Image 1 (cartoon, rainbow, N blue to C red):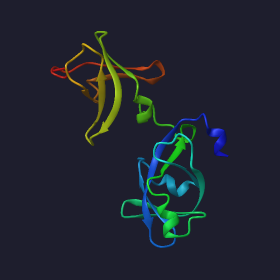
Image 2: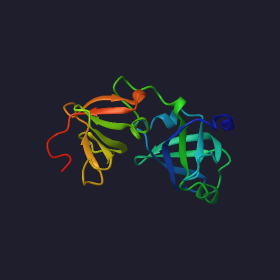
Image 3: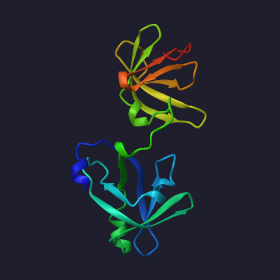
Length: 182
């Protein structure tokens, strides 16, 4: 089944961090704002840390929440050592399987690589990361040569600074606050 997804883009929704108990269960740290999605899934697609190709598709036999983590029982994983073999595996979904977000909301992978431009037409650089601070997100921009002496520019994602987000057109429009490029 997953071989046909070879050309798909995938997004990480969790990481197996350790065996849980002695019956082959694994502890998963969810990387999603909706960890309850694990309870709705019939199977998980596992990837080794730096691999673009899936390592395997595992049916989910059981799922429970435990101390902020998700504990999964995967079909065919019945011992501590089999569960240990899955440590550091990433659980990914095809971008086609992601739930649509409300208008004006974007997944981080949709923002990475967008060009950051100012209202005056200056091209600042490219978004390389999005920091989620709690109060508001912060775009990490790798500036183009000559824009600033800084190695990265931090842009707060607030309405008076980030005016437009246009992933389909490849850019984000910002109104710089004084001192952001110093």
